Image (cartoon, rainbow, N blue to C red; front, side, top):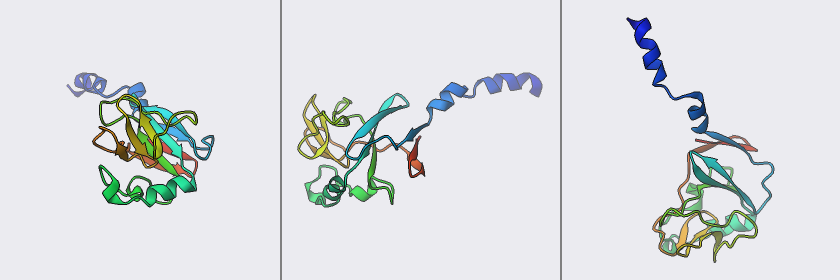
Length: 153
């Protein structure tokens, strides 16, 4: 009986191509200081930015009372890797994709990301600072596999 049931049960497992999409590895080496890239994970844009010392200091020095959704920068980055911010690049207002990863993109008043649809602005920590967006940009599950590689998902 088990020999007959097993092919049916095994067919219900996710296929290899579906499992491959559940995580994505990203090489950080080509990302220049002060710029970012967009990778796709589970159909979502993921912003990976290599932050400058100035961007990190500005993000760390923000008073929580100035934030719409207060969250310290230290809770939005991995310990020992403050120069890297990894965010789901979807505006928390209506699901648009904010601008800011390309050097020529408008980044808003706080130097992070700017959603041109309704004017929401995020700082270099991905925290909402202005506009109708109610929440900070979400952080996907990710881990550093080395100093130059992350695994998202």
